Image (tube, rainbow, N blue to C red; front, side, top):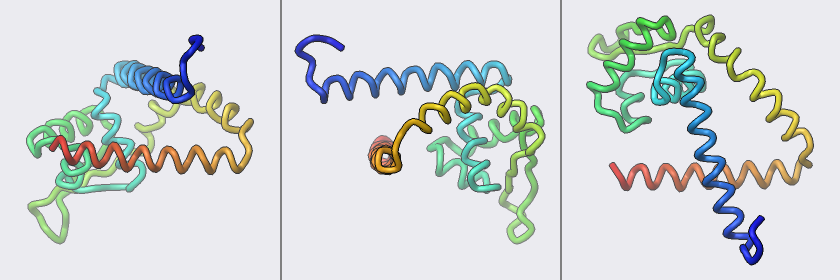
Length: 150
């Protein structure tokens, strides 16, 4: 803590540091798995949804369809997902993560997850509700800014 620094300045400084460290950590994990951070973020999106079309991934990431096609091919070749033609529309490709392959990444994240669970376990329900509201609001800001930049 710097003398004379306001609470808002401390908040922004800690947020920048957390964001930077998060990116560095995800980059290190991605490197261990032979992936890029964007590959991992797409896998995370797919883990939440279960599956998605290539077009949905392009929309979610802001990547071109060509870049998404290359990413799908990389992830498919590395065994992280399956890609199949949509039976309703053969022009579309549906991608689904492979649960067994995802365990490789889960093993790298396990120690991090344990430490975060310990940290979060020390917070009250009210504190967790506040933090969740803050994260949702930040997510909305990020989405608005991503849309603006597109």
